[in-house]
Image 1: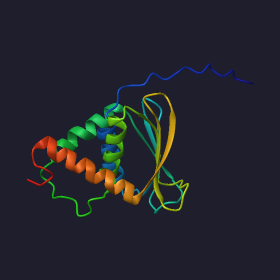
Image 2: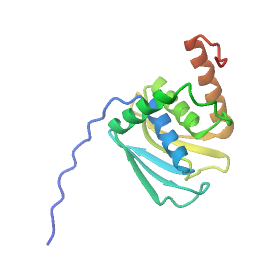
Image 3: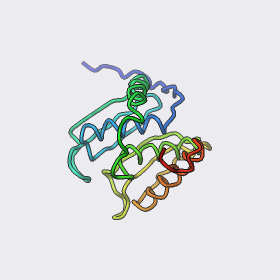
Length: 169
């Protein structure tokens, strides 16, 4: 028996704060010890295929993050902020995810995919696929030095916003 396929319906996109969403996802992956990831966003839900080994590797763990999940993770994290000592590694996964999300937010872009498991060049660390505000599809390789520079810039910008001039309180 052949079951006819339902016609494709366009998924209505919800407004996402990518800096917050990706930071929360990065914290969750970090907490779980997942090092390899391939995260896709369909306009409503983040779907992540992840693995425990360093990339490139297989991704046997599948996770899904809906806006309500991200909001809950952010609220739980907000209660812990300021009580945890600063991370020893400035360039940790949640910080990198937040920085990439901040880049998307500033440029009014929509994430399509974020992965560290499908390197196009030997030195690329992350591949970020997004739709620009003009509707252009962009695939951006980010190497370690470029990611580090983005993180430092965001850190300094956040310091200016909070009045700490980038210094810890």
